[in-house]
Length: 119
Image (cartoon, rainbow, N blue to C red; front, top):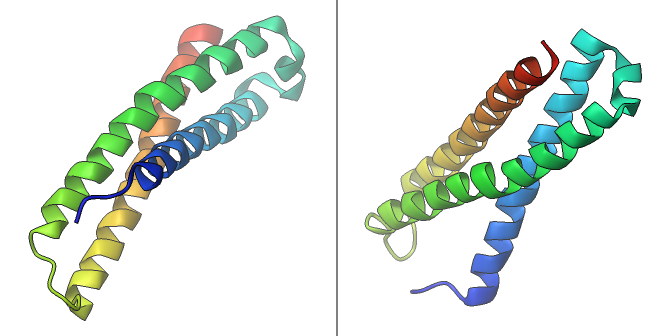
């Protein structure tokens, strides 16, 4: 059964929002840890956040949205009506793993950009 356009748009927005949240959290942590909280009040930090938010929303958000869609397509081949407990456990575990992967990838990319810009 195809998903409605509204649910697809909501999934795109939530994936991009999560990517931006990971970026902001990682950037604030990196500023606090390596440059000091006062460095957040500079124009360099403003540029870092503006560009980083855009890149996180579009690059990370779209990449993980694509991964979610392909994962859902792959899982749909194994779905039964009603879904078995094993299927539901697998879907939940894969979704959690994908979120964890997004957090790690977002942090590592933010860290690389931070050190490239500040060191």
